[in-house]
Image 1 (cartoon, one colour):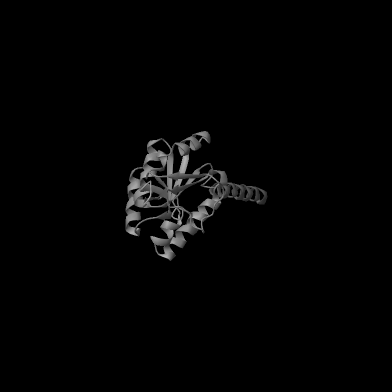
Image 2 (cartoon, rainbow, N blue to C red):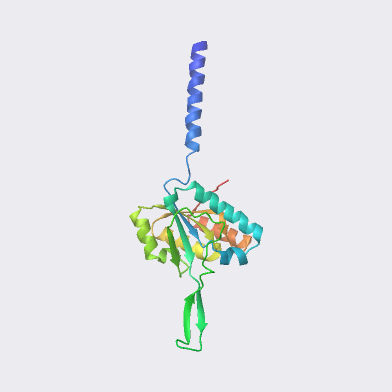
Length: 196
């Protein structure tokens, strides 16, 4: 009887160990991460320092959990209208200081794309990169929940990607606005990941 109990107990412990290992599976495995607009222009002037630091820490946490080759950085282009006394009298140039990534952002590769339009999936280079790498599941985090992020997530879903967001790693104009966007995304079938 003792021998049977020992075998049964060993069997239960093995099953528990297997179950625990399956629960430890990396939720980021085989997914691509798009880090949207974590630029000094936004993080230094649009939000309080405490809120920004928490989000940048969360963004870096997610980046560190990913396969580094699967991380994609998106940088928004800022154009400046210039007026001159010589020809050309009116022209545009890029505001490179506004386009710098936040110094706290963990850059793990050179997969950097620049955008002008709100929806990142309007970038042919990004679409080509995702197709070449056979990407199917995409997480989008970063700036700005109510605009760029929302539009990009919805377009990604329309293109057939399985889309995810991580609220702790997303910046909104306000907490109320961000919460409203998260509810809308859930209603549209977008998956929410919790990094806690």
